[in-house]
Amino acid sequence: MRAEIISIGDELTSGQRLDTNCQWLAEKLGELGVVVMFHTTVADDLAANVLVFRQACERADLVIASGGLGPTADDLTRQAIAEMAGVDLVQDDASLAHIKTMFSRRKREMPASNNIQAMFPLGAKPIHNPHGTAPGIDFAYVGTSGKSARIFAVPGVPAEMKELWEGTVLSEILKLREATGTKKVIVHHRIKCFGVGESDLEGMLPDLIRRGRTPSVGITVSKATITLRITAAGENELAARATMQPTIETIHQCLGNLVYGEEDDELQHVVVRMLRERKLTLAVAECGTGGLISNWLSECDPAGDVFKLGTVHRSPFSAAKHLGVPGELARGDQSHSPDFAAALAAHIRTFAGTDLAISIGPFPQADSPTSVPGEIHFALARPAGALVKSSPFAGHPEILKPRAAKQVLNLLRLEMLGTTIDN
Image (tube, rainbow, N blue to C red; front, side, top):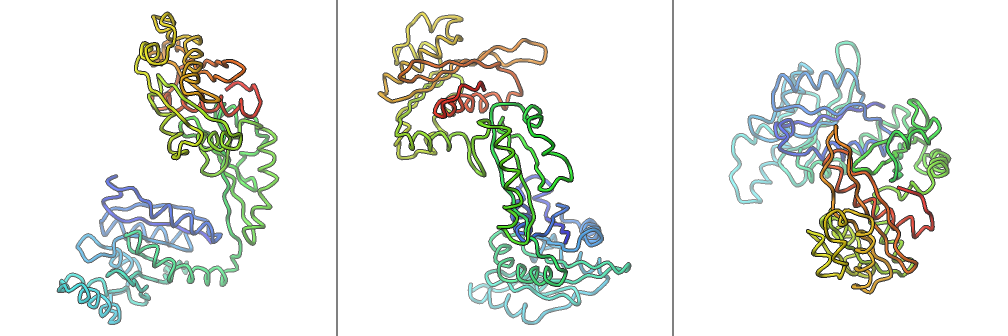
């Protein structure tokens, strides 16, 4: 069964509001084994809505639309479905009575414009909306070519949309699945990686990213974190997960410690868990990252069980003054050196009295496409001494700070794993 999700509203096409309904509906359909092939967003324009619904019904078996069911002139979903199907709008008395009751309970007079919310394309079934004045629409469409599609239109208000899904739409789609013989479910699994570029990582995976492969493996990158998305289908969730397990094992075998977590894991979550398991404490001294690492760790460890202290130094002289870093390391080029990063980590560890400490030095000037990039230096202080790493400060400006912060956290993670892999 192929599906299309239609999101309706000027606030979406203009970018004034993020379409979270579409994401939620797509996830729910995927759980039912329904393949979502198209996401369409359309403005509050009747002709555009008619066109979008017509196209959706031609290429999908199931159409879920959200929005456009209100009482105002820009709410056009019911009119668009009726015009596409070539039928009239007719009043549903039960729906009108419910709408009037909603206003009466709120001790408000119902405006005449709300009568339109009780109008439905001829042949459609109302979907009861217990807590709103916008009932949904369940319409079985058959085109002139004989192609059929089932349309479910639900309110754009997320709470009402979800309530109608759980109360009515879900059970109707399950009936459709039964009638069409669709019994599979679709399951997703995310593996998080850090330490190499996207193309390098893809080259380490033998034929896993190939189109048409089952289970499929997709790859996305966000702020230097690479996510591998594994998708498998099966008769039930257990069967689908069993199908993807050999692929998961292959990824781990090929990538080793480049894999740091799964699903919603970020590096800071993993690092805090590892510190807690090992009963270790940590301090952080930051220059270039401006407190980003400390913020991440604080969110993961709100009680301060493992992350004991974070300091932000806007200049190397601040580290010399407050942490006792030797003054000669804070001067000139020395502040942009591995020695400064090592001293920064060592002194914050002593100052905080923690088992471990990490640091990152000042950033050089951002690179340009024609310049030779500078380097950033970061360090880990531990009882055995300081471990220092350096990395080119190159790339898009938006990625430089989060990537640097992740490089520091990854250094700590790899050290706790007992590996010397460069990152």
